[in-house]
Image (cartoon, rainbow, N blue to C red; front, side, top):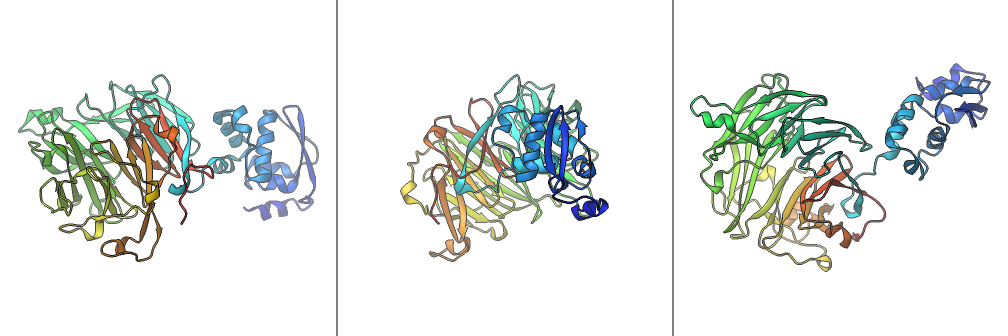
Length: 478
């Protein structure tokens, strides 16, 4: 039923007719059309046919804010200072305004050229976050001191906290609306939790080597799609034994049983250390794993791309040396990620600090294209050996260099320059942080979720929330 149907069901009601409501002892006066702007099946819309003041035993001040939301599609600026999100959410549900309420709080589409720090989220009891995941559509997961705190992904309010049997959690992913998968640097196995309790554990097993049973999880991919033959929904987890041997396990989500083992490595060299990051690229059906290590001789790392159905390696590169040649010898990757939407790999060179990209659909012997800085006036000095974090999200590349945060974004689809840049159009770098942002500490993780960006800093409580705004620091003229 739509709004027109509601009006027709009460033919005596004029859209401009005034309606009086008694909310918690306070009288409100509005119009039929305002009440009917709520969802047709909502409680408020049903009151549009009343002829005498209806008494509703709810908080009148909260109702005043929600009535303003109906009239202007925005909450008054003071509302969130006076009431908690939990209070507002409860009353918006009661009146049938939850969708309008959530929509009013949702940030605008994420724009890397106009993103800024807006707030911090600190979990209860222990505010230092050891791992987090924002990939799930409607939830944000924060791990802290062996606990998992669940936040509503839209309004960022704390939903619940569950204590695990682990002392620390180093990786966490929501594999379904009900189940979270976690791994620990201190405990073997992959552990599964609901919002209330432990739901089971999974171990990498090898009857010929008992040490494998004691392997720990180093990374988890939230989903690896659906197997064409069996119809199973699966996810992936990377395991590492204490002696260095490692592999990636494909797990059936419904039975939580291992259905395949791929990418097993002996772990006796830098080229075969455990996967530190796993990401699934659904458009092309590929699983991308990477590892970057820092040692006495600098950075070394590798990328491997698998077809999880066959377990075969589609492409791989090792830096330094290895299977695939690099056009920049000595400028090994300091960090690397894959963009599942833009279908490209992105890395930052450890010596130059330059951003290199490679098209997942055209991987070859030397696939890297190094992007020029289109904002040379904004350049900051890069010190080789500094901390680098790369995260790809919505066809943008976010780079954390020590405490600074920058974004590389495609701003025009036109051919410029020569060589590989013709294939990539124009990319522009923008520093989305301010001086005070840099001083908060070294960035250790970046992850996008919805229209927000989440940032964790070393030894700093909680995580930062970044959103598009009209008051960010430096903007780029297109």
